[in-house]
Length: 529
Ligand code: NAD
Image (cartoon, rainbow, N blue to C red):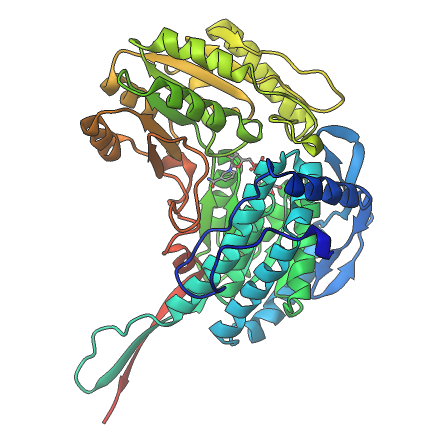
């Protein structure tokens, strides 16, 4: 609809010139807010529809269904989806293998232009995609905007990267030979995303796959299949050939496990929890009968991210950064700040200011753009509340600590102070609106605590000392480190994203080497003359 379009873009020309990230909406502008409310009303009218599996371009129904519910109002069904099971594994693989035969020999220009077209279509429907996420995963408007904007960045960035990779410089030329090195696709990939960036991560791993010439079996999270179904509609509208992406919502433990184990799966692109990532790593390592390759795994996993606040930091900006990074999207980001490690000299002042800031956060319905909405589902809510109960024993509740009123899965933004290093809440990913605060004896002690988990995804340091910033750059062992800013909000291109240790396989989405993970290099030396 022409009246509900995305903002005017500041880019001079699309798809050329320097890469620029997608602009966000300014919802203080009443015109934008009015359009967003109208789009939400329009999408509300489409809730509860049924979506099919798409295998080789054909619509497929199954007896079992997945119901995707609105976390802020679980009586509301967002979408009804088919549930792929073991019997869909072979058809999906056959379709992906058949499509691979032609897709792998398309030109990189054709594949890149598919991504550019998808981006152009998505840009026109940006608010619509945002509204689906408001309903399906309880993102507020700004969080939904960030998710769709990142998706648009991936369309643009990976298309450009594929074109760049195709122009790789020639290797050293031996006398009497023509020597070349080209990056060719791998084959059929299993793409298994989480629900927390249900558009950007789902689309990012899928787009990186197909622009590199692979074909995909996409199994979205059962908590967010509708936004993925909408994205597949875009791919089809943009002209994606049948079978290039096969859309198969299904249970992780049955369908997901079976596609990982399949002998014809060439690689697995996964983002999700540490437990499932390690399981995939193990299953993928087994050679199934008929399997002639070592499966590649690209695994992006959990975090226990810390912000260190030094004694000489600007406390106001540290408080703001910690509050935003801990409670944005209800703390359900792999990059969320779940530990604030604060120098004892400013500890009390920091806590006092943080309490006041967090108590300003309003909890409520994301359709009305509340600051903090519901957590993803009932089981997640129960787990988070159990962590809070443990926190009441191990530390001191500074604010929050309870479920919040409402039909949905609302939890108060909770800060637990005086949590000791090495305790459960200091070590385990909680994935909810819960921040623990730990007192450090000084900067070295703070860095030691920050590094002392098995994860290594994001981190930040607030300090006014150049020397301490340099020390953090050298010694704070995380894949994405920020100085004097929050630890969430990585931007495609500027902050290639992915973590160390148990946070994943050190891959960097949105970075210059990401597409190498989806290709293999072929060297040819040809005698001439
Ligand atoms: P999850 O691990 O529960 O599920 C992720 C996906 O794996 C889902 O699609 C699920 O259905 C599937 N799955 C489950 N069991 C499987 C199996 N045995 N075989 C194959 N697939 C299976 O994670 P989640 O709850 O969806 O997402 C939250 C987690 O994701 C958090 O730990 C978060 O830190 C992590 N995450 C990491 C990053 C990153 O970039 N490192 C980004 C976003 C989220």
